[in-house]
Length: 476
Image 1: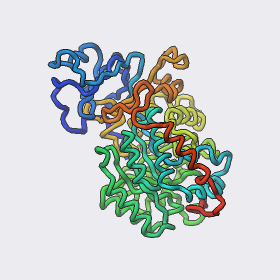
Image 2: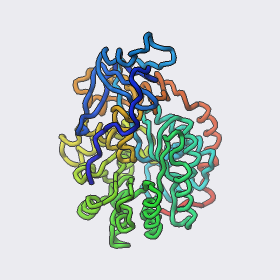
Image 3: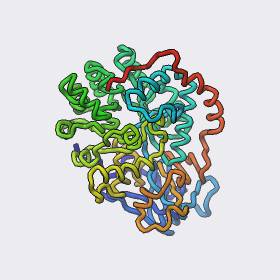
Image 4: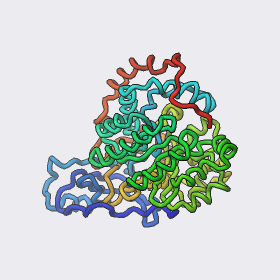
């Protein structure tokens, strides 16, 4: 594997600069990236947005005057955001979640994974209706917008509904219809049908993937068929694998190979397949890292540390994966296990857990964590040439973080402040494709009180487990 590409102008040529900007952000400090992907802060920055893309990021009054060149006084149709006192960052990316599962937030606590799945989550998921999924997805989108997430990767059921909600919310997403072998050929066919119908929708903000659930619920034949379909249709694949060490040990005992070796055997690491692996806390590094190094397709890992801490699992071996050239993006998983869709928390926990696991205070640094939260996360979800940096030609996915709170002052090291002091509630403005989804902490595309009110009336039927059904059986 090669490292993620440095940001560059991937899109169409920027329109003539004499035309007024659609959106102008001034007076902020901007988090940008150098040629090697290193984090660079630009003071007194001016960010110019035209046609949903970043036209320029520069510093000082001269840049502001250039943005309005030929326009005379600022025209009323042009939107301006005063970013003084704020840091502008690329929108955060939640690389693995299940948005409708916010409806199950806090339902099953202090349980081992097998009891969490078999006794609670999979029985309750058999009660899901499209309306519950819609409301859960709306609530999740609102939470992510308020937390500065502009893109998420979702792997769940009834994904047409999630795609509709994504389009209405204004967010960007990589969506996949999950399937199990127990569903028969229809499950895989439905995943493919969704991916082909919905990719490129929502003005290009929705991309799609195939979504086999995991090697322990999808058999070798289905995994191999998924790899063939991915190559044939140019679709990425999003899958849970090596979620914990128990799964890896069970796979070795039953099949003589690890879950990662199973993916390789199925062709999911071959050229022409882009693979996103959720979790990978159970990697057998001696066996699995060589497999990942020789992968001919793009492979990335999404890490959601809060849930691992709750379940008492090991953590994703970020240092080893980074050394193998595998991008590691930040994630939250679903709110049923993680309780939150807060990527800021995932970033801070990643740093702390990595330092503890490696017994090395010099790893992971705040700047390295910001790299994982931006460029590496974009690469993980297949958007490495479209998002993840504030750079000319990239999509205008921008957030403004207010540093005026007492918990963020003083600022000696801005990277450390962003990683260790900032909270999701410090996000002031969230912008996707140049469209403002939240301004001054006011959501503009989701009505949270209405969603919460209706969802609360549906919860008793949702959590009823008296029927004794499960959508699947967890064996690990």
